[in-house]
Amino acid sequence: MGLTSPSHLIILLVILLLLFGAKKIPELARGLGQGMREFRQGVNDKGEVEGSDGTSRSVESESRTQERAEARTDTAARG
Image (cartoon, rainbow, N blue to C red; front, side, top):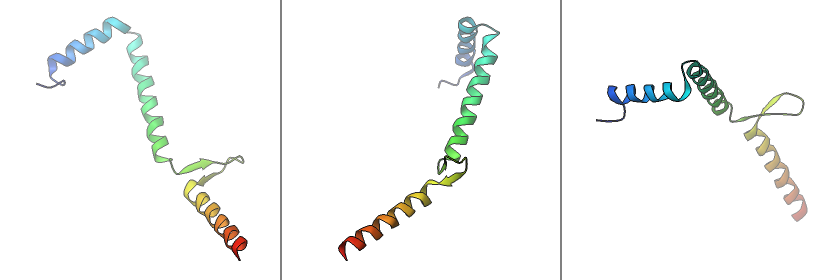
């Protein structure tokens, strides 16, 4: 038997009801859902950063541009 057996779930729900009360549980569930939604959105947008002007740019393209500029500087310094 695992943690998801019906008797375990009933006991867990009774404990939650005793700890938080009937009015607080929907608020907690709503907050949990909102947090999960924001987390998923953050994971999906992980490659984007917001610039100071409010536009979003790809982190990868920004780092590639910087690497190219550094390579040009190194080449110019050697040559």
